[in-house]
Image 1 (cartoon, helix red, strand yellow):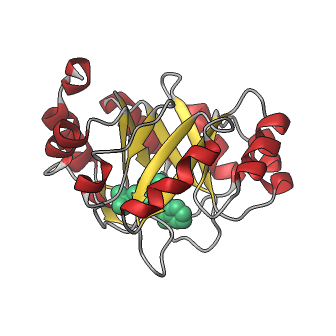
Image 2 (tube, protein in one colour; image 1 turned 120 degrees about the vertical axis):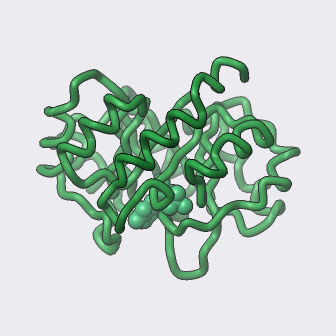
Length: 213
Ligand SMILES: O=C(O)c1ccccc1NCC(=O)[C@H](O)[C@H](O)COP(=O)(O)O
């Protein structure tokens, strides 16, 4: 199972979280976020990692040129689109960056929001289902109503996000059965400052649960 820890801002924390077992790190490339990091900060973290894991840049309403510039300045392996990017935008990005994983995030207010997703099936590699907040784009700590995901079927793998913590992650995985999970504020001391004890607790709690799914 993929475990993505998002909102990495510090080299030592990126290294420690990789050693604890994360399969992906997320870097917030949205300037208005308190977890925002520059290309140079991203590169410093990635160059220090002890093993090769997925490194994902998170963007919202950025232009194709802005995204490709950050990817070319860093060693990002994937791009997460967290705004209202269209299927056409994803298609164009895929043509520009054929080797880069494209993750499209959806912020779900209710079950009807899931109906937007099929239009993206041909243009993205992975989906990320996150909680809806009227003012904040992500890292909100709000949990999705997992019941609305019972009917969700996707030909592509998908990650469950939104308010996951070491306390509820195991139940979420067992109930929702995603291909992976994404956590940010649930393993933080403050925005952008990860709590390594909580990250370690997370990996103890989920153990090798992924192997059973
Ligand atoms: O985390 C942010 O500050 C952020 C800002 C703008 C767009 C996206 C952002 N985060 C995206 C993520 O992938 C988070 O990990 C996801 O929203 C889950 O966050 P949380 O509920 O805190 O676990």
